Amino acid sequence: MYKYPEPLKKLVEQLMKLPGVGRKTADRLAFHIVRLSPPEALRLSQAIQEVTSRLQLCSHCQNLTEIDPCPLCSDPARDKRLLCVVESPADVTAIEKSGAFKGCYFVLHGAVAPLQGVGPEDLRLDRLKNLVIQRSVREVIISTNLTVEGNATAVYIADLLKPLNVQVSRPACGLPVGADIEYMDPVTIEKSISGRCKL
Amino acid sequence: MYKYPEPLKKLVEQLMKLPGVGRKTADRLAFHIVRLSPPEALRLSQAIQEVTSRLQLCSHCQNLTEIDPCPLCSDPARDKRLLCVVESPADVTAIEKSGAFKGCYFVLHGAVAPLQGVGPEDLRLDRLKNLVIQRSVREVIISTNLTVEGNATAVYIADLLKPLNVQVSRPACGLPVGADIEYMDPVTIEKSISGRCKL
Image (cartoon, rainbow over all chains, first blue to last red; front, side, top):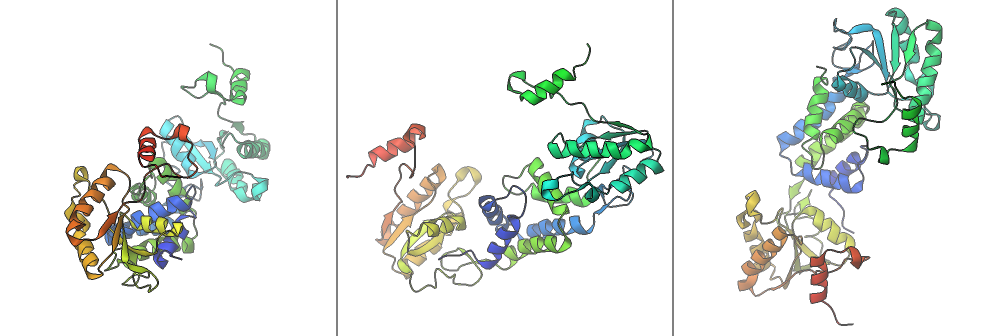
């Protein structure tokens, strides 16, 4: 039986560990990488190394950063008393792109998911609590995903912050901009109607 | 404007060079790689390095290999006088999986594509010619893709080999196994009918 040469086999195995990369995609990527020139391959492999060696978590907001505290936490123009709690660093990027938020963040790096063995104790919520107290935060917007796990996490955090006398909110749930109501799921439509705004 | 930390930005740029990887996929992969442990990241980056440094082209068939000649060319059980010409090493794997071929290969690493500036002179066809003469090959099966470029390459190679008095063939073109005729494209149906076999 014909087999891939060992280095190719190893690369395919490593690539298959990436999210959304199955056997066929890994093969395609590997055959592309094989054809890279040595300096190109070096650039890719160094970028992978550096992203794990040079990045750390901000000691304030837990976002990925090269310098601690991160640029957002050390920016004097940002409102330190307004906090947005998100599940991942990618959520920070998405919210920043919207330009709608000028406060600081707290990145959970996950959500409560009992079936995957992730409990509230894994989300460093003690640090969130400390940050709220230390900065005497005015409002916490809990922007976890609108999934079962995200909602459960939001409820848990709201309960946790209750004794601190801080306002807790959650982004509005409803129809996305550009939505075609005909094709929206019934739960979103229900939410958008029960949460309707006066014109 | 918020930006990714430099190492993350670099990694996303490198990943976007891979085939089929756009901005969003690159982001998702990068955020996954960030969360790898340093040894895991090392394994991935080493695999990338090694695939370019440890692999070479077989001096006989041009397939990727660690040792020259490759295991297929040095296997005494394979028919050296039967040659299958393919566009890429991935094609060798696909044909080997079928188990239908017991000869040797010749990998072109491309196809004639004038619009991309790939002419016949880029495909090392002189080496193919030499191999056919040297091994006194009996039959060459030209298994380039059934695309415009693959077909043009097949015609060119057939012409090239004509003076050598070797049999030249091409795999049958028709309906794939499991095909639902209702959904097949008209050109394939036409080919399958004009090339019909007696029962």
